[in-house]
Image (cartoon, rainbow over the protein chains, first blue to last red):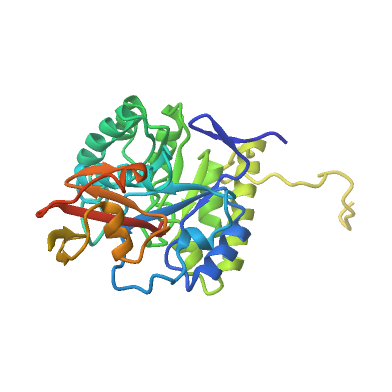
Length: 263
Length: 67
């Protein structure tokens, strides 16, 4: 079965992308990543903790070398300028790494994206040669503008970051999926396996999640559940679901030959 | 004495002339990190060559867990 996700010219076997935040420790992070089957994992870029023991382990040391494609993000940035600076630092940190996740937030409570700043940052980053996977609202007009700028993947939210509320507007997601020529990935809002399956059944090319796995009671088991859900949802999408028939039942068994006391 | 702003905090260092010296003084030598000085990236290959000046604003960042 050759069904690969191609992002910025590179093919991936897994359609589940996962974050590395909020785990109990690096050991749990590594185990959950392994169970998820993910090939692309997000990392955040932060000021080095100057008070910290210099011998304490770092995330990059804790992950198996060269197994994952790292996807540095701009989480926590509220302006195009901060996001651009953060990703320039990421490119330097990761030795001229080009694949990045752009997110520019607009509100510290609901973490909704600021699409004006996102568009501004995307223009600059694409011009500088970054491969930009962009977190955005589920507005199809903004999604199209981001694609026209040259973003390599459009990543609309399913619901608020870290909320686990699931897919609130499948209709908008479908509009974006139908119009886009680059991959569309649901990023943010997935709460459990069925949410991921629904996203894939809608025709999403992939799903990116963090909290749904890290905040589960058993993160490693949930990571495995998400792997299965994304695979199942993708297979169902490719298989093509039966049409819905409203208020009209059709039996699966033959109507003829039923034993009866009436004849 | 060198007076700089490091990750948003005013800091002073003795015997620090270059970015490589600063990384050494912070006990971060050999770590995967990136440096920005006054808004411009300083590539790793230039850490030992770039002299620091009073008033420079530096950002030193690493990768951490995130979604």
